[in-house]
Image (cartoon, rainbow, N blue to C red; front, top):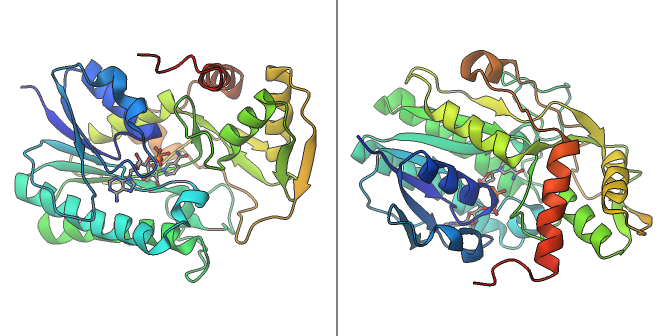
Length: 318
Ligand SMILES: NC(=O)c1ccc[n+]([C@@H]2O[C@H](COP(=O)([O-])OP(=O)(O)OC[C@H]3O[C@@H](n4cnc5c(N)ncnc54)[C@H](O)[C@@H]3O)[C@@H](O)[C@H]2O)c1
């Protein structure tokens, strides 16, 4: 039987790729988004598909739809956006999770919660396994996001224990690719856009902090495999690429691939910026048979191509 799947935050970066993949697998897809950080441009190419439906809706309000599966992605993901209206960010994570878990319970749907590596805060162990409880500042400027996501995880597990609801929690690490929002301050899009425009590349601190970067197609594969696990498997499961690069190395790779003349400039580190971030992905390998296949050498050029076309106005002509 054909599944009907709800993707919240479906007009965003990850959500739009997920909608596309689910349609390719033959699902009916309801894409719900309030277009705060997402954009209808990301899903224009899906609008004519009779199995695709876009709903403008704010997840902090109840939603009644009949679905078999829910991927709960709605939430601004970049610090610039989630710090714009921190109260709304917490509401989006917490009220949003309550609304989606309540919906899943009513219609007996499976639900996957898009959590984040930020639940580990500024980690004191490295790499971070799922059993690590994290080191989060509960009153800092990132807390609206980090603690909101942590509370959403709590809600998932309480719905699981109290109501037997099939839940899946994915802890997503840095993901990049086409359709990232250009000005959201995330490091990959920032560097690429600065390089393509031959503007200085801004590095915070000395650029010695490390990050791991997962290409979007690998991440979406991880979501789908996680949703397809048996009901007993809840996660949380780390999804990310364990290849570790310093921010400076990333900047140098982008410069090389774009052939840019940009220079590197250094600015002070923002508050609570984690020094190291790298997923331990053994659980995903064991339970989902998943590991990322697309390295920076392949993923960066695809992303650069997208931003290059975007900046030249060659996308969305239709
Ligand atoms: N991209 C990453 O590297 C990354 C890493 C960790 C976690 N995540 C999580 O994955 C999810 C998707 O992230 P993304 O990178 O695609 O970000 P994004 O900002 O592109 O997408 C989020 C989407 O949610 C929508 N949204 C925000 N508030 C909403 C609300 N109140 N009601 C309805 N829709 C709302 C936005 O308009 C946007 O389309 C988020 O939950 C994010 O926390 C992403």
